[in-house]
Figure (cartoon, rainbow, N blue to C red):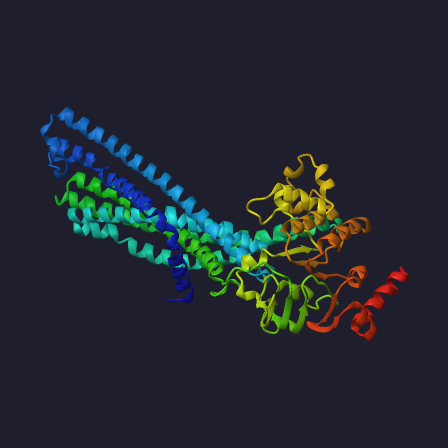
Length: 597
């Protein structure tokens, strides 16, 4: 067994638990489909009765109760039976299809929910390295393919196989040699189906990759639309999207071409089988081994048998394509989050706010180290300015406090205990963060400010907005606190978005505060208002701020200067100026730049 085949079967076995809550519904659906199949088996028998019993005087055992009626009644009964069988079988199949559709959509919703929840537990570095289009394709398109197999195709194929088995048993009972001729087509069909399904699987993998690339290009271009428009790159972005889409389309057409070839081959094989049965069956009737009605049954079953044969072949191809989606989805679900609660983790008590980095090193992977042996102690309530050139590891260092990542070596401690000893939820509840790009959602102002609180307190929301000097922003909005902001707060200016993010930090009222370049990109007027809000926010909290603002650095209790992932200097602003080291060089360079400006 190939590694890919083994991986595909393992993926399906891992997905089966999603069907267990619906096992009785699935059983009922299967029963209805099997009943419909039984009606399909009965369809040609009234015609055989008319040909053999009424016209040919050959008794038909399965419809023997009708032989006691007069000729008119026999014809009427046979005709009514045709209609009843069709109606009853159709009703059963209809209800089975509705039930299966409901089950399939529920399974898809449950699976999508699990995938989405799992995505939120994976590390930030994973999401940086994996395109959003790739995740979107797995979440939507791949799950849809899985839904089709776990619901529709599995039951339909089972019912079709049972129908074929029933027809085969009846044909063997009537004439074993003719039945053998009828069934001879299944060998070549099975070989061809297996051959084409392997190739279609490979093509589908290629198509999914191209679809993911196209989705990533689209989401990135929309997210960066102002830049795309300002730099006149709309046509370039459209060209990129078009090329990725065409490559996906080419793979799709290749798969469709292979599927079409398989279907045509199946039709040719079926035609040979039909011709052989008619030839042999006609001679059997001539020789008296079969009645004309028997030949009608054979012909009817032959058409009915070859129809499910085509359906089974098509379903197998679709299942092969869905297997690619199952592999991709399960590969995602099997990926362990980089940060999880340890078995001994307990809820964190109310923090005092002392933070200690002890021998902390961090690497995103082999040869990708970004921090080396950082050791520093921060007392409660201190304002810590973290400075240094771009790529020095500043953001990585502060991301270790709320366990957005864990150090490769060493430990981060709050109030003397390793942060890994606390449950992640209780740890993060006591940490607030304001980044350079305000993290707002397409929710109401109230829900944005109270984000993370399942039971928002409107009084606290208003107080937080006032503390952040942001209440006037709400006052001018048409629906006040109930105003829904655009995606990522797009309906507000940069300064307004940042003040709402600060209001959220006020609402959280955490003992530890992280500020990551909170004034970057703001004009001087907006920056002044944001700085005023931040000044009130940091009072009484242990605050880590990544900044290049001289005034912020000057008021810090402790300055950490990082370079190439190493803590080069640490101390008060005055002591670091006195040593004339790297921090003094940076500050002197900034002052010179301001004077020149």
